[in-house]
Image (cartoon, rainbow, N blue to C red; front, side, top):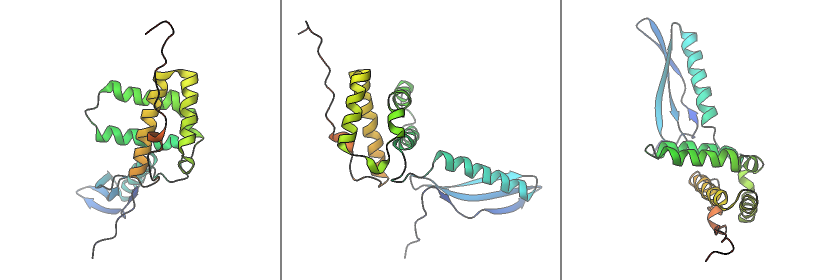
Amino acid sequence: MSRPSKSPGTHSPISVSQVAERWVARCRVYSMNGAARQIERSGPDEASALDSMHEALSKMSDSTQALGTGSTLEAAGRQWLEAYKRAHPNAAAGTLEQYQRCLNRTLQNRLKRVLVSDLSVPLLEGMIASILDERGAWNAKMARIVLGMVCQHLVRMGLIDRDFAAATTPIRRRRRSGRR
């Protein structure tokens, strides 16, 4: 019989032991991608080692907060970008900057108000259409690309069944008058 799986974003019980003249606190952290890794923090006494470990776990949980259907798309976008950076360590800096810029400038205010459970093709169609009207075709195309990757991230996490952004209408470049 296999061991029960650990919940992503959690950690094992913390153990504290004395090593030489220092105290060391250790535990295993289960990341969002299912990988487990051991972390340790030390201090001059048992209490400071535990405090240091709790602080480290708090920082980790803030950066890898588990998403749910009640999470906003803004949080999903941040988590997707961090996962993308880890999965593509050799990605061009310009590409990462474009994705970050799209999340921060073009999509941020729109994504704050949308919950993962509210995702639908018509909602994303409207969002992309408003970006097209306000910011132009290039920004709308980039937003559609980023929304697609965020949706794919949510599919991999099991929060939605399909990539809603892929079903949206592709953005066509508007031809200027007088050109062939």
